[in-house]
Each structure stands twice: as structure tokens, then as C-alpha cells.
Length: 129
Image 1 (cartoon, rainbow, N blue to C red):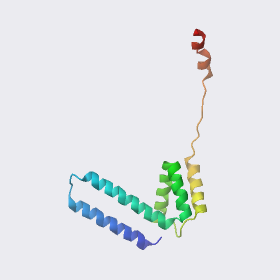
Image 2 (cartoon, rainbow, N blue to C red; image 1 turned 30 degrees about the vertical axis):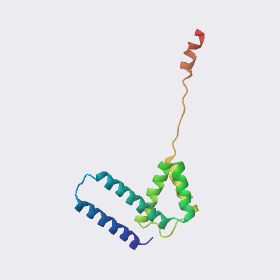
Image 3 (spheres, helix red, strand yellow; image 1 turned 90 degrees about the vertical axis):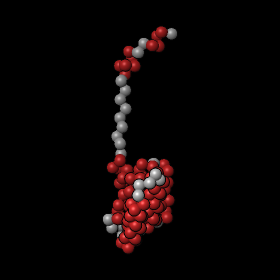
């Protein structure tokens, strides 16, 4: 992904923000917020299209359906890597899988279940019948 692409996206965004600022604070702030969210999603889509192959993009979309919070983390991480210049070429599916595995290791939650058997043994509600 080239610096010219990122510069172009930044310039468009700057122009949009400047035109919104000059427009004033109208009652249509909700519409502007929705428009801004749409623009951000479009920018994310453009960056991810430039960074991922079709197979990797399909895998990321599948992840977003199954685990949206994890998908958002990976998506934001990929966008940050693209902006900082860490991605020199498109990521294929295997490279995305390795990134997903690293994220999974970091996000692993250890859950423990603790049974309090004494309370269950002291419960005499069954004897009332």
C-alpha cells in the first residue's frame, strides 16, 4: 500500500472535515454523524481491500460474523499496521491466520468454575416433600 493512497485518503477526509466545520452546527448533527460513520467505514473498507487478498478478506468477514469484538480488534490492528507502513504487500490467508492466532493467544481468558458443595449439602428444601 503506497503512501500516495494514504495521503489521498487523508486529504479527502481533511476536506470533508473542513467543509463540515464551515457549515456550522445545524440541527442535522445526527445526519452528519451518520454520514461520518459511513465515511469511516468506507475508508476502512478501502484500506483493508488494499492490504488483504480476497481470501484473507473473506476470512476476516467470517470472523466478524462469528466474533465481532475480535474481528474489530484485528481489523483495527491491520489498519494501524498499514498506516504505519509495516505492511509492504498484501496479506494472504495464511499470514492473516497467523495474526489471528497471535491475537487469540493474547485474548485467551482463563475461566474457572468453583462449586460450593457445602451449600448444596445443607440445602434441605428437598426434605419438605
